[in-house]
Amino acid sequence: MQSKMLMTGVVIFGASVLLVLVLLATHGGANKSRQFEVLGDLLSGRHGSLMRALLVAAMGGLAVGAMISFSAVGRSDAARRKYCQETCVQRGFTQGTLGLSAGRDASGRSYKVCRCSGGPEKELELDPSTFPESE
Image (cartoon, rainbow, N blue to C red; front, top):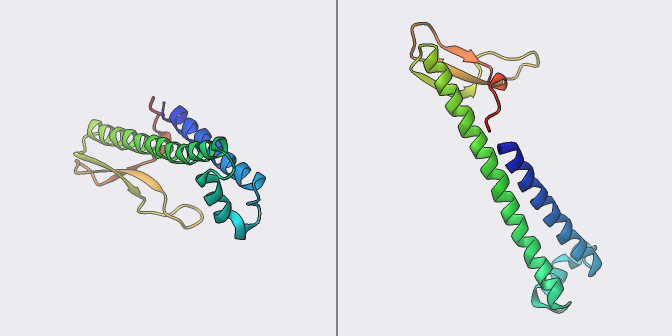
């Protein structure tokens, strides 16, 4: 579900960016120094009401596409956090949180883990990439 939602947001955002770029380029805004002038002309309706409507729709599409994409990422993160908590509780710990590893990978960087704490044994780190994708 989240991946479909994310792809929908990305497609809407990408199509809107493309439409803005096409409108700018076809009305003399390919030159950087004229882009704001052309945007002003388009928004004021000097190039016609259809061009103005297309630009307003494209700007709205940018906002909607970004909101849908960020919402999908947030939902995915929340589902991963919930699964981490449930997995840790099933293993006898009281808390499961997402964070960075105590150790380093082969390149010397920290990596994401699900850290289980408050249990009968010391903290346990699980790899969240092994968690199932939620729908």
